[in-house]
Length: 516
Image (spheres, rainbow, N blue to C red):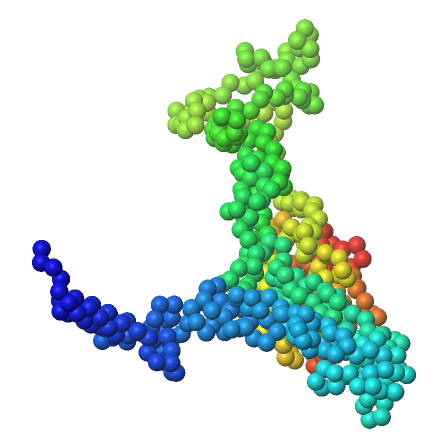
């Protein structure tokens, strides 16, 4: 091996430097500006790693799972809007905890922002400072005050607070109870002091879908979180599930028991129930009851005897019938009976057939929105949807249409699908309703086989919950569904509420006017 001289070492270093510069030129990012996110691959320009070309042909940064309250400025790098923080900008920034504090006296953090208020005797300034005010010191406001055209008015730091009757203190507005919340139908409103937030209903799960967070139906059947019986089939529905007993069993789906004398019987194999088909079942013998008609013993020697077997009294012998050569045997047997044959019990009488009405099965179906057993469907062809509202601070909820959503004359339809049991005959429809607010709109009840409403109401007494009973009957075709239609009026605020829907077999006790 020849020793490396100084000249050879110089040529080697120059060669390595040339190759490194060429590789650097083949893969480098283009200068900043409108070309951000563009890299050169040899002689080709394309988006860098972590960037993706959008519809306008520009390279756009990609962030997973997305920036909730911000914008993506680089691969998995979010720039949060004012008032938010976190890697995906999904956390509220507590401005009141920052140094220096944005407020001079008192600071109240809100979702995505904050509010400043001053102590008694001071007035809030635009920069968050508090100025001495003799007039405000006399008002004794809880959260500060302002002077408007020479009058002193106390202030509340949040839109979810309102002045109490004393005009000095602030009380919370329950947006969940008043219906002024903007939660969609599949989310539950939770009230907080000065505001509210929406969380997923029971049976839904919050997931990131198509670039946004949404409540998606939780399939209890697939996740094996249902409480159906081992002899039942689980059927997933929106926000819930149903249980139906298998063939050969009966029950409510949560508890199923074998049906006696059924052609489908369960058998135990390996500690589990299996279904066994049983064909050509021979019923148990049943004792034939004794006839009530006094029968006359018949002697096969062509004589008839009346009385007890020990006391035989002969009667005139029956005349022998001449056999006809043209008689044909009954195709179903070897015995031929003449048409002029007269029974020993007297002449054959005509048998009359009478049509009897099918007895209707008695039932009471609770269609309540909390834990009801009925199937409700939002109409997709209407202008808006019914929303979920809650009774006070409890967990029970009802369906409503708020007067703050939509435009005047908009219609929201909610369908109650009727089962086979309800289509056997007339039934009583019972429901609670209220029309809260001036000129908020009207509530109607329609049947899918009729084009006109069978009931309508545009106000409720004292704007409180009212109970209505309607008898639903028909002459020809049974209805498939009941439609509750709410039409928005021209007033602002208020709501139209619906709750406690119950179906009972037979006509209503307090309603004498059936609906056809």
